[in-house]
Length: 270
Image (cartoon, rainbow, N blue to C red; front, side, top):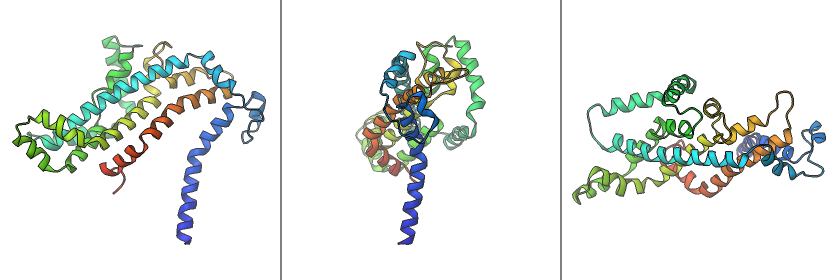
């Protein structure tokens, strides 16, 4: 009984540490400037007008649309190319397969900051500075983590599926597209949600590549709401809550499939 109580108390503490910043941002977004002196107090008269004022201060609607476009394109590319590479590494036999996979997996240990400058030089050489291509192309063709995730899931599928498809005359592409990929929907869902969240929250790369509001992301909008000497915190927190809302809706819609995918893909620690 005591052990269960301690576990619940620990879980409550962890949940509170994660939710407290969000609750603070929500209450701050409804305050006036005079109520900021007491961060713990609830707003006496919630100012919902802060949310409409955000769209007057910056083109947040356009920024959210840009971010959605970038996230959708990168997610589609990641799912397709990572699943294709994962299928090749899991099911196809070719010389040096394991060595190539280990070398590719080793790129996970390379810090992001190491690759920023080479990618920046490539984008400048292509003439893609301050264009949507700079936001879409670098993450379009898969990643080591996504390939690893899909490979591990494909390895769990029974070989009999592939053997039966081969006897029916299917090519390797048909086996991947018509037989194995439909069975890999849990892993695809996990990869899609994680990729979408990563692109949606990305800040460093858009900060380097995008200057015009026409192509700016939502995270850049938060930065542009901060003044050099003073910041309208209620307005900034209102923008933060608007940007957070699509992610909450995404998780609410995909919660069951996402949790099931985590469990079946082996990322749950089993």
